[in-house]
Image 1 (spheres, rainbow, N blue to C red):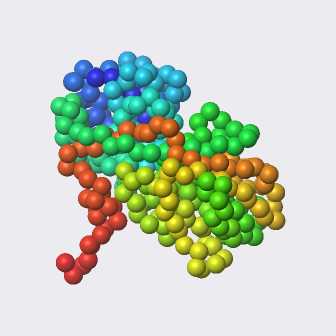
Image 2: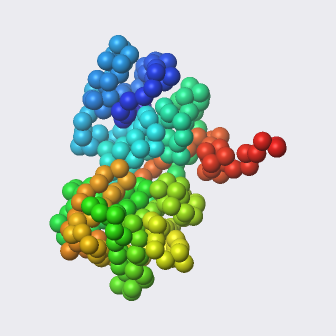
Length: 293
């Protein structure tokens, strides 16, 4: 099995687990490549050099015949790993080296059993849709996609901004707010949720439009089918605003028009047999947790 590993750092409590992971992969005779900065971090932090067949530093060096990409970290690390996989159709395995994780949902305690299940092919693949952003000046370069959300925000002052939203060229609303989130179902449990947005099942074909601190309290989040195109025009006292695609931020001029649509490819996410979205929601959000129970 050909495995690429992406990560950045981890706490000392994960030291044993990372050694155990590489030990198991070596015993399974896996062909392992690793993100070069992460490899250097492991060597320095643990004084340990895992047995690998090579390193990569960009998405071009992650070969299309790679069986799996292991993302080691939290949900932020998982989102970064998407930019290495892109449209290659390689499933991503989220290994959680920290605490809360919706995407990185394999805990260190589960790791040995999880790897065993993976090599025995006892898993399922879930397809997650992405958002694609188009701008005239190609704001985010050659990868203008997000697994979680696109967000527009005010930049240089405390003044609210006006965000004019059109859906399929039909005027939807002008949001007078601190910003606006357009989230995928995957991103519905991220920034959008903290701003009062609904939880949407990951396999749903929807976008969630969630305003950030809207001036009009009757303006609420709305769920729309993701086969619609969305266009944003932003105005305000300042001439520059911020746009984010997941973990990446760019400043843009008020004259910039943002066109949003569903990407023409999906990300594959590996799920283990004992994992389900509803169990993850219950565990991570502590649904039903009550000291009286």
